[in-house]
Length: 352
Image (cartoon, rainbow, N blue to C red; front, side, top):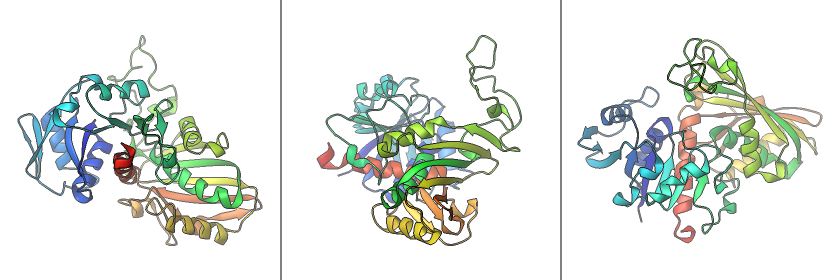
């Protein structure tokens, strides 16, 4: 049975999701989309992508639809989720990927338009539940959870490593440093505040409480505290709640990021033991979500990887009860693949 999907926000994640569905998910169908940008712009950005290349099928704008491989997908331009008539086109599940309606109550507006389920494509504190495939999907309760957070790409990478090591060695505490690609989130190319954003004028609330984030992302390494990562991990790994903190460094590369995770273990382990434990997890419960590479990687080597975490085994080190592991991830592509996995999971007949 084909699952009919709606996308609100045909941006980076929405377009990657559309591409994956077209290429490798015949059981899913993009039934309708919504975006406040004009039709011509949305179609053009789907057709041409500076990171992924051309869409692997003809894409055209026609009337009130985007025509992909000859099939018309209706598009609306509503500014609010509760005004989008998903039911008109039989949409069963909506992926909320605008970034503007990431809180649970706002995303719930899609339900009023006729959707049965909503997936928020980022971490949020007040969805009905936060799920990570391979980590805590068993927490899903179909009768209670209609608005589901798919957490975020960085949380996926960190959780895949921590969850694999905790049962074997016991994670006492940890600290992560993420080298996060500039291309994965909008930021200024030169120092300054975008006048279209809140905080640009004296009477508006500050858009950038962290002044580092208004510095040139394309030419500097920009430190940024990311307390949201800690809270996102707490939601999906309650057994490690409060034990892992994180800091991000935005770096001037177009795609892919790296997470360096330093853990204090209850049971010390040597690097080869840690790598073997991670490899076992990658071949078992976290298959397709976690990978282990023994090649000397750089960020561009994991562009297009569908895994949420590619452990660089050559960088694993230990010192007493401390262990350092490094995981690479393609922020957009790996995460969009997890969206596909979660859509399938939520749409399984036994979960309806």
